[in-house]
Length: 229
Image (tube, helix red, strand yellow):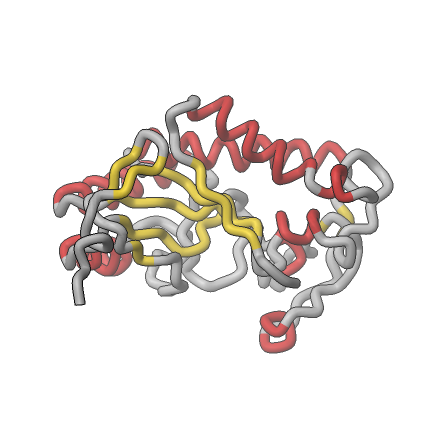
C-alpha cells in the first residue's frame, strides 16, 4: 500500500503542512491549574510533532476566563499566557510541525460551580456530557455580552498569532457556545442573534469576521461544525 499522498505536503491558505497527518484536538487535561502551558503539556504536544505529524492541534482552549468545560483546559484569554504559548509554538516548529489552537467557549456546558453559565437562551444543557457532569441553568446573555464575546474570540486569535501559532480553529460544534447559537433548540432569542437561520448564524459569522480583521487575510482560520445535533 502506498502512502505517497498522505505524506505529501498540504497547503491551507498561506500555511503549508509537511504532510497530511494531523493530530486532532483531544482533551489531555495536562495544562496548569490556571490554563497556562506547563512542562507536561509542552512535552505532550511537542512529542507529537517530533513523531512526524504535519500539524498538531491544541485541545479546547478557553477564550474567556469562565468559559471552560474541562479541568486544566489551556487558556487564551489574557496576555499573561503568551510566554507559554510562544514556547509551545517554538517547540513544535523545532521539529518541523505546525500548531493550531482551538478557540472555545463552553457556554451552558461550563463546569465552574461558582459561576452561573451563559448561553444564548436560559435553557439547560441536555447533552450526554451534561448528564455526566451536571451544569447549572444558564443565564441568557445580553446583546452587549454577545458582542463582547465576538471581540474576545478575535483577541484570543490575535494572541495565538503573536505567539507564533500557525492557525486557529473556531469550535462551532459539540453543543458548546457557538453551536448553541446556531441551534434552534438552544437559541430562542428574538434579537439580531436569534430566530431565523440567518440570525442564528450571525454570531459565528461575526466571530470569523473579527478574527479576520485582527489577524489579517493570510492567517488560516478553520471551523469545526457538527453534522448533526
